[in-house]
Length: 516
Image 1 (cartoon, rainbow, N blue to C red):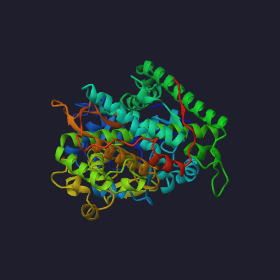
Image 2: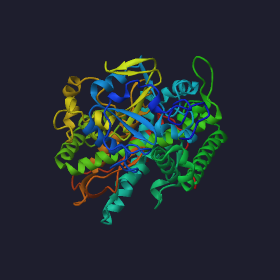
Image 3: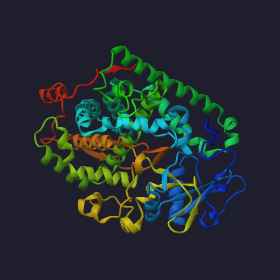
Image 4: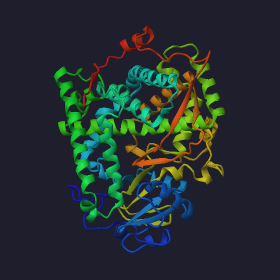
């Protein structure tokens, strides 16, 4: 694997070490797949396009902890609830930046998601940006979320009128990109006015796909095997950097908002409350890219999976729709507080994230020599990958029907009865996703709006296929829309008084259109 600039290999281990040689003294005790091939490792029956789903299949066969080898590197996977809970102990374990996450460092550097634990910019950025996800800040973002939702429903109305199905993953990507770009950075990519994805999305998908491909080829051979892909990745990174630099330049030229506005204002204008330190220009770029990529990619996947399950389970959709009608009533523009009252809609979202967490795994490393689960010795720095997609299907936690879709798993009584650390769609510990409440509010709001407006129908022959690019997304998912005759209510028009009044209480920076 390619090396980084801090003395570590791209998998987060010191140069010159292989993962099989560091940190797991009794690695042989951990089950592995049969039919291991020399040099190549455990590749029989595996696909380079679906490494995470391959790992889920191995997990079902090999049990709550297992190992796989690829090109000389041994990786340990954990999904049993007891072991995962042990790894969630913040005193003994910390986030490990390895595998595909480390492969994103050329573009995201020491941004919040990809920073190593020893890098000081993580704590600085976290402390500066955390107030940007407070309840007060979220209430301000809500108005812009409504505004973007109008553009989605306008787009879907045109498709419905023309008798066309809608491209769910593509349209959810447009929605979530516009939402984070407008709320966080005051910019508009014009996604819904385009017949093809914005070049930023194309570049973003390219960097994610390239990061995953690096895990599927031998490190020393990567420059030769991926020559063309490496050139494209370099161009993709350059485009992402230029786009963000233009965005920051425009904000500086506009004079910002004195730190009282959005996430970009906080990055540019806010000093650490204790040290007075500010984010460097380079780190601002990395944080913006991190938020634009991570802030929309996982949420678009979560919405897409939720819409798939709603279409496949009309009885669930009817129950959720009844709740929306009851809670929101004739309210034309649901307020911030009204979204949290959609408890069953939120259960639908949580159950979708249980079955298909769009960030499907997270890695944890030992802070000091320890023993995992009382059975597996780990030296300081040893790490394991927690398979959230299998943790969420552990029959000892979720029951013998763990593979089935059932939102009532998340009613209040069931949640209280479950052990902690069994549902981890946003990671764990201090470095869990900083924007999780933003994502959950946005997704619940959008599902409520779509349920209130449409009856959604699946294509008869569709069978769920999942595409992987570090994150997970339904592949080829299209839905048919029917307007709710006599019941559907128009989505909120941001020009109307109800929205304008709420917007007046939450000043935002002006929105600028980003060109190609």
